[in-house]
Every structure is written in structure tokens, then in C-alpha cells.
Length: 145
Image 1: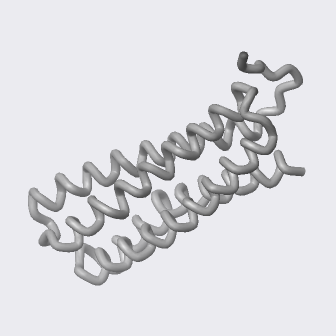
Image 2: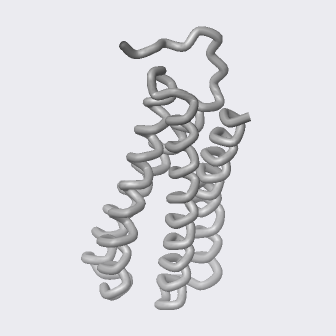
């Protein structure tokens, strides 16, 4: 049951991240365009998603610890969750505030958007890796030490 709860938390986190990146943000851009309202909407949504991700990462890390940190699977899940959460912190505390103060459609904004996309990609890949490993049903887990 704990393994299912951990996998579920990671799955809804990854699903939210994918939905934001591939459905919400492009749709918002298509309907609102490169405006201050668009930027504010994206920043607020990304902030909410990041806080949601912190909760999911916390659940995954705590449950992995409870399930046993002596398996490679649980350690990798913990590390993936932690890396994704740290990337979210970087995005939330550094990139987003600077982007909100930078004029849209300028080279500076485009550079920040590129950096933001790269950090978001790291978070998504780390969380998706943790999710895939959590979902993987290994009959013989490798134990550490």
C-alpha cells in the first residue's frame, strides 16, 4: 500500500508537469498571446505546480525511507524526487521572479525562458525517472551494503 501511494504521488506530479508543459502553457499562449497577463498566469500556475510538486516529493521521499533506504530502487526514487524538488526551488526563487521583471519578447526574456525550460526539463526528467522506477515491479531488488 505504501508503494502504491508513493507511485500515485509521483504519477500525479509527473502528469501535472506534462499537462502544464504540453497542454496548458501552449493553449494559454495561443489564446492570450505574449502579454503581461499571459506571463502572470504562467508564473502563478508554475508556482502552484511547484508547491504541489513539493508535497508529492515529500510523500515519495518519506515513503521511500519507510519502505527501506537499503534498496537501490528506493534510493533512486528519493534522489529523483529530491533533484526535481530542488529544480523547482531554483525555478520558483530565481528564474520566475526575474522573468516577471523582464520585458516580454526581448532577448533577455528569451534567454530566461530558455533557462527556465532547461530547469523545468531537469525537474520533469528527474520526477519521471522516479515515477518509472517506482512503477517498475522488480521481483529481486538490489540491496545496498
